[in-house]
Amino acid sequence: MIKILLLSAQPRDLNPLRLDEEKRDIEQGLERARHRDRFQLIKKEAVRKRDLRRAVLEEEPQIVHFSGHGGGEEGLALEDDNGNMMTASAEGLAALFELFETLHCVVLNACYSEVQAQAIAQQVPYVVGMNDAIGDRAAIEFAVAFYDALGAGREVPFAFKYARAAIDLADIPESHKPVLLTNEALIAAKKI
Image 1: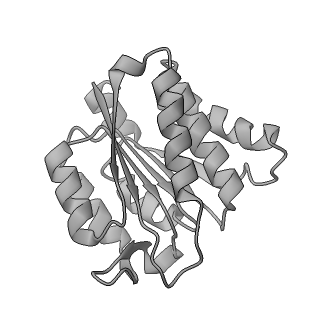
Image 2: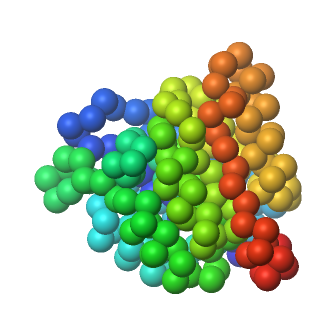
Image 3: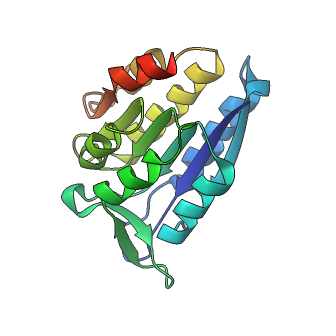
């Protein structure tokens, strides 16, 4: 069973995103997938730092997917106890994810998240981040296609390319924004 931990945060002091649409479309795609019985989707919303670390500890997922805002060097935008923005640093995320050997892939579907992806890629075989601001439509197309490909039994590198092609196919000029970072040493060690 491949557990996908789908985390989202929509701080009230930032512009709203179509996170519900992204979650719904990912879930519907996996429900229709050829290999749907291989996947379990766990969704956590309004994620705070404590929620993030607890969810990873409790679920021990193979894939962590974050949807929301990113701020480059400032970090990923999570929520505080009042629903306002609180950032999670690249170093903090990398330190957390290093503790979980089951973690195979992290997808940061957030603007300017390549900074966090670079740090996490030292600890996780595959990490997706965004090298620039990415629009809602492109982010949703990417995420849905990525999980459609995984649900069809494809590996992460194929799913990544397929998802970028989906952005192009939707006539959205942002397919260059998602980046895939691979840690070849970890891939070889885990025989992925």
